[in-house]
Image 1 (cartoon, rainbow, N blue to C red):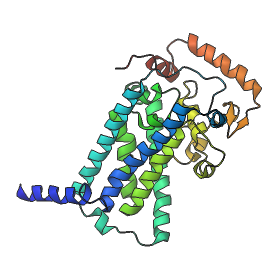
Image 2: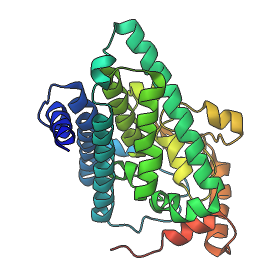
Image 3: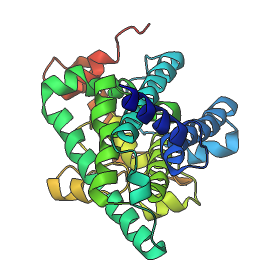
Image 4: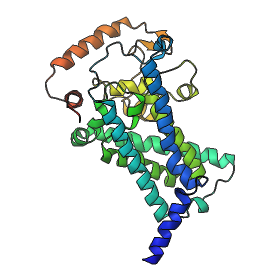
Length: 303
């Protein structure tokens, strides 16, 4: 018993009480980055300067509005971060010397581990995400919570059911860390990068100069299609690449779907009629698919 207490104290000292330790960085930095980046985009939404409207991801046919209060969304994301931090602490307790035993060994190895980690994370999240749409029970009871945000925004990037938060994001990070064999320093960079990328993909903005959106086709416009109730079985990929959607036939281009893209007016006028027709059908549709689940769930009252 005494040994367990000492082990717990040792783990606490390496994380919460040592801000310069790799364990502390890996647990805390992604969470802080989430709120900093999300706060920036929330401020843009509040101020809503006219010159930035051309860079907003705006659907030609908007679809249903959000029915959730921002306070409810923030509470759920805080719960997810508590789950994320708690699992991270558990990993540190179980594998106290993981960071000591796997130090960073040069930038070449670190870059290779980073790239491998991106591929593993993308693969894991694609298949879990797709599974939650294909399995109607999982969609109805877990993943439909995330799709209550028909119009995504930055704070809602990690708005999930707690069990999905554990399975998709938190456990996915742990699997990525161990499967890639990366050091804790590289793990911190990857988890932080993935967190920022996830917030950007839910922010509703695409600026003309954005290295992340230029390097990775999985952008705010790409993911916004997936949040539209008419296309929730498209564009499962997150947070980096789109190759799994291409291979599995679920890829859908954002061309012609949005009014603006990087400041350019869409010229796909035929899509307006098509999408407007889809919206009318959605409003009159009976219960038959995930689209119905998403539409009905979005009307639920929130506390």
